[in-house]
Length: 80
Length: 496
Image (cartoon, rainbow over all chains, first blue to last red; front, side, top):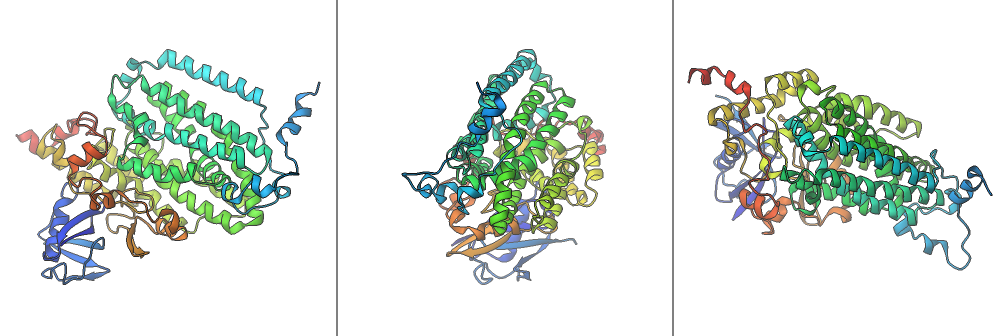
């Protein structure tokens, strides 16, 4: 099932819609947001994904992480 | 024969006690507004202009003749072609958002002309309606001449009739402010907050900038409109005075609500124009300085004079004044094909100026412009899409403007559930406005909801063409196509 999320990338000026399936991972959602925002913010190799202030395990699926449609995630780039 | 000063008070104050109909039926609270008060509480309603209809017609005729004379002299296409391209695109932004909003204000004023609770108020609102009709017609007339030269000016009339995201946001505010409000809310929101607080003074500032840029036509237009605004904005103060006497909390809430709502739209239109679309050499002050000098000082004093508090979110507003329009502009620049005007990439000189004017926040936004500059250098001129986003953006479920609250370090968007539906708001004040009157806002669909419901296409190109009403010729581009002189200063490019 497709889960549209509101994604906010640290360093960016705007929130974007992240379209992701519930069987895809949290890490993939983070990458997708970074890619979507790449005209404004250079993507990094690693980034943390947060929901309600808690960091989510990047290997968890969207479904396991409990993310449902139109929830907010925050992606924080990690500089190597 | 009675002299003017003898008959005018009789004509202005032509109220009487109804004998064969209940006054509640003449002025139902659902249309006249609340609190519903007997006329004895409104009978001292007054304003300083006390214009007669004959004087109104004579003055307006002279003003129209003056605008026409300037149009004849400097309103030709070749006069506009001499202007700086950035300024012209700021003009397109103003031209689209102004006239049909003014037309909606005709209706708001006419409601007050019928359902306002005192005859002097109704007389003034009648003049206000005629004023706003004029403010609709003048920009439509002036900009229509330019359409055959640059079809983006066609959005002067087209804008509010489209489903463009800016138009959806504009209608959401304008419909409520001017079409959906009763005369009491209209007087507080439009006459007191928006006109007295923002636009009356904005027109003075804009006329000054237009003069500096050499846009004599725009200067004349906003000067002419401003003199009308200064008069009919006076409707707000006596309504506010009576409302404060009988329901001070409602007065405070209306001020708090409408200051925030109108601020957001004002920041986008005027913030863009002053800090990005006015040529650097013609900028007299930053948008923030303009707000501090012309709006905040005056507005704060007026609130204090009426015993009102500054809006509860004042600290958040002051923070937003530092950065909000920068957040929206940078975002909109990377989605410029979604609008009807071209946008400028700030170069090193502009960025240095912005850093000086916004020392507390510019360093947070500047990396985005650094990144965009690099993208243009990589692609070379003319490759618009290399510095353009393709993913759907997010919108506030109250103001319908993109979610650009806060700063790049922390976006202030907040989510909540109401009536089984999830909502997102750009800011705490927008959520507060929604939660005070959810029945007024709950069923409105923003762009994202329309896409998810299948009512609007998710593909950006399709969205632009079939839903936003844009064509490739008409949609916004970089003002120089990326061919800025400062791009050539790159050592990397010089080597190649």
